[in-house]
Amino acid sequence: MRLAVFADVHGNLPALEAVLADMEGSGDFDLIWCLGDLAAVGGQAHECVQRLRELRERRGEEKVKIIGGNTDRYLVTGERLPQAPPAEESAYAAYREGMLNISAVVEWNMRQLIWEDFDLLRGILDRELQVTVPGYGAVIGFHAIPGDDEAMSLLPDSAEEEAADALLDRAGWLALCGHTHLAMDRRVGGWRVINPGSVGLSAGHPGFAEWAWLEWKDGDLNVEFRRLPYDAAATLRQWEALGHPRIEWVRARLAV
Image (cartoon, rainbow, N blue to C red):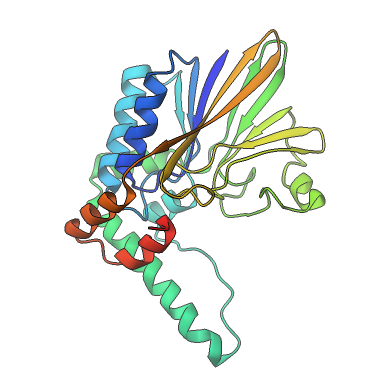
């Protein structure tokens, strides 16, 4: 069995196109899983949602599974990243700037979405994926941790107890996640946890679009992390021309 998994597109169409082209050139996959954060932050929210819709329609809904992440929820519900309010005046300016930045970007992304995009996003929130691989066992997929699309408990350096608690009420052998933008392959108790990294906003490999190729043979799993270069500087220029309201804020996240 062959499974392609990717996450955290974040409205970055050139990065998404790089991943999908690499995936297309890697042969057929039994399953393709997208683990959320399709549209917000980058400059081409509508185009990314449409590209993923086209992929699902072309390959079939039984093969292509798409779930939502926290920023998809922001677009659908109007919520924002919960943050503890500062207790001191010295911390207020940075707090206010952060809140204004994310609000401006999500509002702009929302203006890009048509009903068809919004309808797809609202239908993928609060979802998880599961498949049983013959000779191997249960594989689950989610955005951040099961039952919570915001938590940062599954980082490469998360404490073992914290990471294990995140998976406590799920059963299986392999957990696939996104959200942190950091590629990862680690053991957590009886689990193997894999994060493919981020398509559109890689924290570990800026300027690269990331996905992972999983293949089982006779019950043994081989994992290949794929990283594709794309022109991040040109992408930012395009977003600026489109009117991105916080281009320097997103530039810092692309490390360009």
